[in-house]
Amino acid sequence: MGQSLVKNYIHIVFSTKNREALIFPPYEQELHSYLGGICKNLECQPIKIGGYTDHIHILCMLSKKVMLSKLLQEIKAHSSKWMKTKDDALKNFYWQDGYGAFSVNPTEVDIVIAYITNQHEHHTKKNFQDEYRTFLKKYNVEYDERYVWD
Image 1 (cartoon, one colour):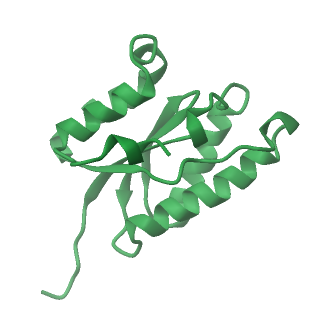
Image 2 (cartoon, rainbow, N blue to C red; image 1 turned 30 degrees about the vertical axis):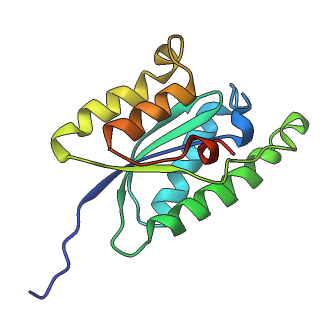
């Protein structure tokens, strides 16, 4: 086989440090666009980016040339520096150290897009921690609660 053919849909989730509510208009949509630009530069085509005041969801195609950890490192480093330039109130903006990354079945991409689109409505009923625990259970990820949030 001469070609390497890859199509990996990845749903990435991570929060601000200590889940601080720092992602508000007018910077929210701008941040989503900025994150999409980082993904594009790394050949990880963004499909949908959204979130809430304390976290981000990214649905993208993971490039065959980029390791997931490298993608997250680039996204977090560049976007946190960028956010700090937007407002003096954001000078202490940081992302949490960890992240969640979940493979998405191609037949469920539209479901994930809708889920990310409706984050503001969704979070009137459920906080980020409960949402994240739901993902961990859905994907059968073993975790220790003591280490997930720091």
